[in-house]
Length: 313
Image (cartoon, rainbow, N blue to C red; front, side, top):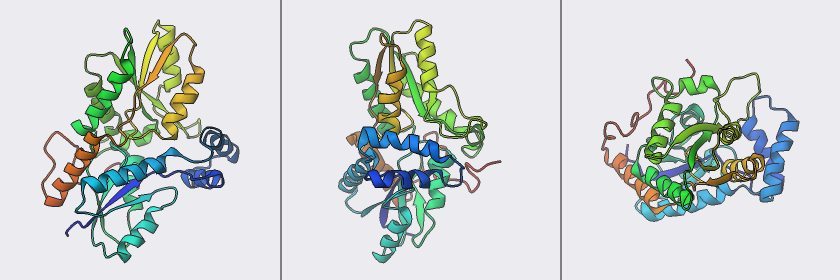
């Protein structure tokens, strides 16, 4: 079946104060998160961003950049948790006559929430295939390297602390066709970006009940431990995120910074955003898939996800 459209697919975020709690209810549906916890998280959006998440505007910018890079295909946009919802976008695509779309997901790494769940969301009136993971592509790694270099400028001996969203240990174990791929690929990408600099991989933005074990250590605990061991320069690298949305700008730039000792120099590297090399890489992968060219060996775990990939075992 010929691919005749692209579908940029992302997490979504509130566009105003009245959207915040309904958005958080969508995100946490079925997880029994107490209302009190949602209200605490809501203050992050309201106090720092006026209730408007940065992620939607960043998706609009990426949509426009992709459309300019791949003018031969219309680029649509749909979210998992807020307007424009994926299902609404799929209905629009069907009405426009789209017969087969290729989804470009704003998640570079394999996991249930970053890959499989998006594919479950994409079931609808238009068949949708998913673009392969791009965590090992130079078009992703080089912008991250430049972000690290910029953040390290002028520092004597910074420690790099790579961060990604924590997930339950059971989800981490089920990631990828053979298990463990979420942490494995994050370590591979972090090592490729760090080069000769010393580095660690830690986790952030845990949102689950305390009785369920999640990936650790937490970024705040780890940075404090580095300080206790004598470190005075730390560069945090949000390798697990493709744009500067709330979990980067609030959790790292505000919350983490408020926790650190005042004499610790803390900097944060930029995410890839709409870096031209990143966009050009996505365009190249799109054209490879449209042409039927298979993924080169060693670049991605797989070009098309196996049926049981990232599902609980």
